[in-house]
Length: 429
Image 1 (cartoon, rainbow, N blue to C red):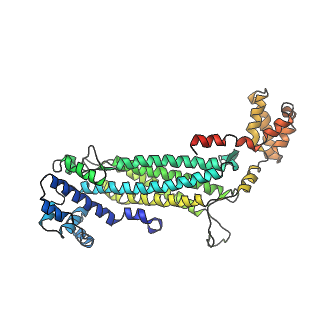
Image 2 (cartoon, rainbow, N blue to C red; image 1 turned 180 degrees about the vertical axis):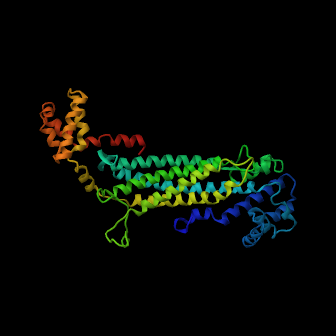
Image 3 (cartoon, helix red, strand yellow; image 1 turned 30 degrees about the vertical axis):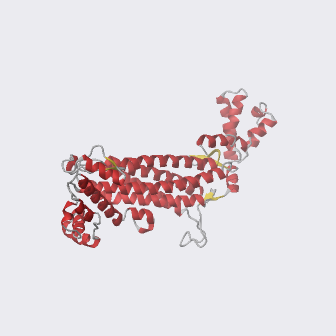
């Protein structure tokens, strides 16, 4: 991921240093397990515990070997004596690489969950603040019936909660280690070695493995990130839409001195939410690659490896970045409540069409007849720019059935908020 979209903590998780530190931790843990089995003498284990790798030497050796693990081992044993021969005892590259990757994914998942928690809190606060703030609900981009901004945000809050739950499952899916040797038979690394190492580093041994940890686990994790990013894009898209000049009901924050265009000084573009949408697409693309990585030849090939060097860190870095970005947008969201009321009045009462039809049905008309009466008046409002409420009040087919007080109640906006408390209670807000 480019520096622009890389935040420090997540960047550290996917740094080379963190990766190779974990390799060394696993190698030493394996040696500890062999020491417990009596293979490695304790006096040699004492020296192994202080083993370190030389990163510059590693890079030099890698240029020759073209193999990360052999270069890593040589750069580590270069600082050891005879005890260095015990490193990588009975292992294959994937034992160390895959187990270390699991640790990185768990760390990354934990950071993502913390960020989602902050977003969840921000959404909850805004949902409660605007619980009864009326605005126009839209379907197909066309005015439907009023909702409240709080209900719209409560919907997002509930979806983020589901995203966090899925993320927990995704983390659990990759929270496994594999120390089973070539092709996974444990022939050179007995199960108790794996059990000791995984227990030491906080992972669960994979019940069955071949030469790699199975990539359905990684696909589960990455597709979960993609689904979370889809929710973020959903929220960002709605904010972008509501910021359109013709609507202008909410706006993302726009700081003093910020510019929206190089040529048009008046512009206040929704560039933060647009960025969220763009990077969400990137993450979804990585989900496809993760699923393609599930099928490998025989007990393994390395067609997944090159792709994972990109998709695992980039998916985590990009999602971490856009969660934080959206949290800031939500916390500093600009809300134009008066504009919301103005927009509800744009269609001159047409939003009351369904309530009018239902009341006529309650008064004894067949639904088809009631629909026809309301639609005729609605079309006149569209075509002649006459207030729907006036047309209904003056229609003898209606006012002969509905009295003055009922007409007043019919056209009250309060009808659209009377169950908001119940919905919030049901959602747990």
